[in-house]
Image (cartoon, rainbow, N blue to C red; front, side):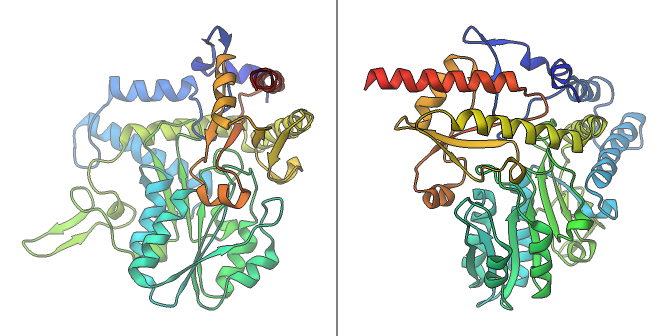
Length: 409
């Protein structure tokens, strides 16, 4: 793959910010969109905007074909067994909340255990806190190694016969750590627990095979993988989904409605109440086509290369602290850092003046910030359209930031 050619497909990257060419290093928050996705959305609204499933007219049929066609693209993308296992949601947060509210509350009781890790995004912490409060279950945390990784031995010791749910992110949005999901799933299943995976940071960057991982649920978002905002996916094994109750009720998801009782549609539609996110699903389908044409293996290799280059260049800056493993093969294209005594928000502000977009704050991971013994960090994250030249600009910007605050103080 040629990132310079790929960049030409992303109109937003061809601009200046504060008098400098835009260097967008915030794809872990949201990715930019290629022209193919933008055109797919435009074409839907211009040519066949209609509600799905209920209409028999031509526009309704075309919209339904586009929406359900996107579901099949998702199925192939993650290698689910059938489209019955692919539910469209608003994003990873909604997907994880669906599992917690529907499966968790129905299957947990006092004394049961939910196992998560210190590195989880708030979306994979708060729903389980709420389930634990409602059911009397205990929330347990997998410890982290010094470099922020999870050891299989710790997983064996933490997951017990009382564990009913294990929910772990496949890739950390802060540390960039790539977690051994397949191995953790095996341990969970040995104890009769289910395995839930937050795939928000993995689906855009690595090839995901839910059957190979043998996870029971897998959640991800479209906007982090070149797709639109407001669309996401919940994968679940069919036998689990069939026994779960919907958590949203209304149109689309019903089979029969009586005065006092109602029945639900079959999978996956029983979990998709109301007018679905039609344009978002079509846009996600276009994003999947785009990513598969380039190849997830090529994207992953490119990001490992960028991560290695960034780790080498950034670690040479005096006063630089980088969090997570220093081996680029153990992390995705995310580098989270602090620079001397400069607050991350000040770092991000100075970089923005140079046209460089990075993220600063707690990254929706306050328990991890506490574990790292910091209140906030800065984060640079890379994707298929980033280049080593942009990392050089980042390093130059960080040196300039350090010099500026050294002069001020």
